[in-house]
Image 1 (cartoon, rainbow, N blue to C red):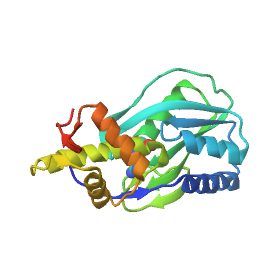
Image 2 (cartoon, helix red, strand yellow):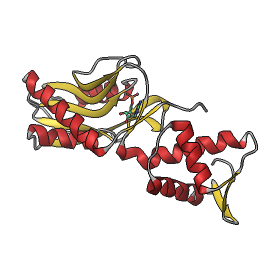
Image 3 (cartoon, helix red, strand yellow):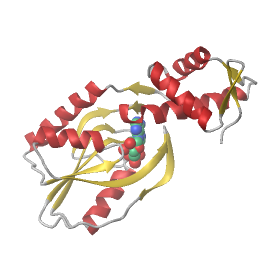
Image 4 (cartoon, protein in one colour):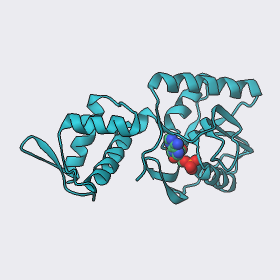
Length: 226
Ligand code: AMP
């Protein structure tokens, strides 16, 4: 599995970007009655956009496409296809990023058909214009070259997945025994990403819980991926 290009996103970045996104929405004159957070990546930006636009109505829909860091599933699905009545409401779908755009397109279609709002627009922090199937109505940042945004809300999940890939790849060359610093060094080398000691420790802890790593004589031994 190839190493992917990543960008580490801080909580401060998220607040700054969400504020910037909200100002673009405000400047356009669109005042949504309800914000729909696209789970899971849209939760934090959606809540912040509510704050910056003083909007009280926030609901959510889970449209899922990527289940693992930087690895797309074949197609997107609406995980809980429930119905609510948004008749006569202007809605704003908020997500972290439009990459392929599959999950947002699906969410928008589902909402138009089943929730019946008078209008739906889409707002995201990042728009990967080279990969996306459409251009969102509002975006804070256009990204021309594909990169994996390591958002703070997937830090542990991504660290875990990235470690799994390193361990699996390195085991092909016979490397199955690691110490903590060796694992961290490899991670930083592969992904040019330093998520901090706590996340490294938590991710390694999860790998042990899942039986992917075992500690023997002070070393972490790779047992194969589950
Ligand atoms: P997509 O349907 O391809 O537009 O992506 C669906 C979801 O996967 C996004 O809302 C993100 O939560 C996650 N995702 C996809 N691509 C990226 C990326 N390049 N960086 C970070 N998260 C991503």
